[in-house]
Structures are given as C-alpha cells and as structure tokens.
Amino acid sequence: KPSTIWNRIKQEDADGVVLLGDTPYIDVTDLARVRDAYRRFSSVAPLAETFRSIPFWGTWDDHDFGRNDSDGTLPGKEYSRRGFVNYRPNRSFGQNDQGIYTQFRYGPVEVFLLDTRWFSRTEPSWANPDKPTLLGKTQWEWLQAGLLNSEASFKILACGMIWDDKKNSESDDWGSYRYEREALQGWLGDNNIEGVVLMGGDIHVSRLLKYDTTATVGYPLYQFISSPMHGSVIPSLNVPHPALVHSAEEPYVFLKLTADSTQNPATLTAVWVNKEGETVFDIHLNQDQLSASK
Image (cartoon, rainbow, N blue to C red):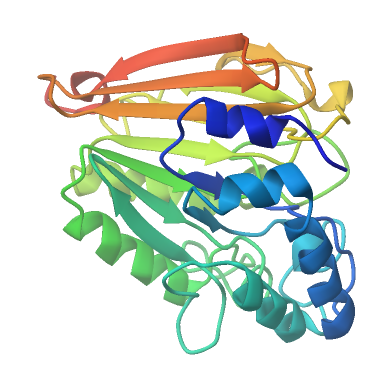
C-alpha cells in the first residue's frame, strides 16, 4: 500500500537506499507471479518517485525468496532469482548464477549484502561439517576476500534475517546457525578486520544490540535491526537479550546511516526514523570504538 515512509526517506536527503528483503511479499516461485509482484511493488507511487531519484540496492528474505521460513532446498528458487535480477539494480548477483550476494562501496562505508537463503541447508557447513550451512562455502570465501581487501572505515554486514535467535519455532535466523556466526567472529579477530557492524531485519520490531565480542573480534559488535517499513509489528519477537540496548515496537521505521570520514576518528551515526521524521532511537559510534587497537 502507498505509504509516506518513502517520501520521508527522500525528505531525509538519503544518498541511497538498501532494501533488506520481504520487499515485496511474494510467497511463490512461479516466475510470472514473481515478476507481477515486483511490478506492482515498484509502481507504488511514493516508492517509485523516490527510487527514480535515489540509487538503491537489495537482498531478499524469505517472502521474496519463496515462502515463509524457506531455505535453499526450495523448489523453483531459480525463478525467484530471475525475478529478483530483473527488478533489482545491483551491480552483481552472486557467482555463476548462484545466489544474489553483492557488495558496494559508498564513501567511508562498504556494504556486504549477504544472501542467507539460496545456499542454506544445501551442503555441510564450512564452519562445522556435521551441521548444515547458512552462507555456503562459495559465499563465505567471497565474503572473506571482500573483507580482507576492504579499505572502508566501516563495513556493514547486512542480510534479511537477524544475527541472533528469534526465540520462536522458525529456523531462519543466525541463532540457528550459531556455529557459522561464531566462526565468522573468530575469523574477524584473527584477521584484524575492524569497523564491522551487523545489520538485519525481518522481525517487525526495531532493535539495537551491543555484543561483548572483545575476546573474539577485538571490539564489541553492534547489530542494527530495522523493521518494519509497513504497518504490522510483532511484539512477541521483541525478546529479552543481554546485549539489547534499545528496542521499539513501532510501525513504519527505517534506519538512516551517516558516515563522516572528514573527522578523526571517522564517525558512524545510526538513527531509527519513523514516517513522521521522528527519531525512535539512535547511536553514535566512531572508528576507534570498532577497533581492536584502541
């Protein structure tokens, strides 16, 4: 449905927009219906007006990948991918027609858009061969190479799902694949990868978490969860967590990131904004806070 949240994004002078999935809800893999859903979503007037003037990127979550809580074993996922490629202007879509992960650099920020659907449960995990994978070996190797080569002050690891446990019956969260999350954290620390921030969506509430990962990563990892952009909240998914700093069960919310590398150290500000332009909550970080040497 038309919403003023898209107008608000433009009014906030956003330089670009990243869609983290369920944009839109499709819930089928029939190619004609997938394309029709993207066309109808793209034709919503305030959204179309904004995206004619602001660059945007995207990944998918479950409802635009195929079905609720779906994973890489879903039949017909190749048609979901084809529809996504038709309607999302990313510069790349995975490798060898597999997956849709991509990355882009924008000023002092490099965004790694992860695909947490295509490879999930299709092969043994690169982190633990006795468990099913989430990212898949090919995507994991791509992410490692990208992080090692990145010179950005801040590196955003973004995906549709959250980086901890939804605490419900569904398995589409990083908590269900914690061995890959823990292996990633250990790898970040072993390779002195600084400036990493996690980002997720999906749960229809907004949250800010600060994890005590100094022993493994070398500095605290933060997770920014921005959800939902529409009017439906799910308060039951706003579960307690020792790392939780802020949360809001509020509809029509988006996350505005501002990075400034003209300051020393460089700064990163995250503001959760509602469609009226009001701040829901925010956080101000700098590069030293995301560095093992400080």
